[in-house]
Length: 340
View 1 (spheres, rainbow, N blue to C red):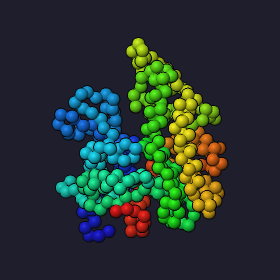
View 2: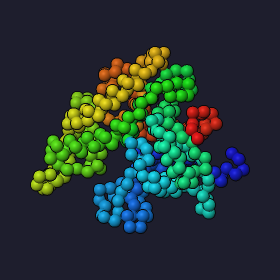
View 3: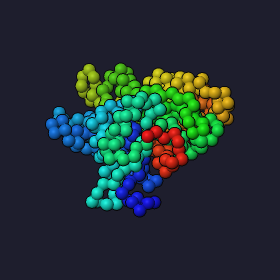
């Protein structure tokens, strides 16, 4: 540590479509939903993170909730900048008198275009970043899982986040084949909303659909450890009268079928492009699942049966990418694959 080390604060940011996690000094100091609420009259930020999520779907005309990231990339530049700045302010500070300059490692989807990378870099710099490095999500997930990414052997990571599913084969500190598809947690939530409207004639919001996914979300119609039915309350579309409907995991598995099939196809497509020597490594070691989507009941079993390669769920899959970003921050000099 240098004599002026207190003037620089080192942080790792997993800037996700659903959640943003900030790591400082090897500890997760911020873990909040990627949502902000803005006052439309004054253009001021009303709330951020969990407070903003609680307001979602319950605001009046002068307040709107914004999710600044869509499909893993920044959709609303101004809101993203305010969100990053607000979340950085949540980090416990050593000094109250000045803001230290920031050295950041930020996570981005592997399919990001130059324009999308520029948006992340600009937002980070405007929020106080002096040195900004970027790491691809599947690479961060692999590091977070504990894989030696610099070894001369193949490892495959499937990171199912909120906005994108990142599939990558990693060897020798680089991504050999990668596939980034914009079908992930948000699409599964949208599928549930659509299904409830068509099948049960009940109108539900994003938050309720998310709760259904967490409580009874499944990838298989037959599970050994089956969850109890989830009771959904809402207005009937025809009569506007309140109704209560029990939803089973079989129903949800049926309604998510199409989106999960697209993820399966993308994994097979990435495997097709994998060189044979690395393919042999994957068959022997298996494929790792990370991200919130990895928690979908029965997904690992379904993929293992379909692709004939064992699938392993990462330990604490929701934070695997953030952990890897934190390790990358400590090894900025060593990891040559970080982008500036």
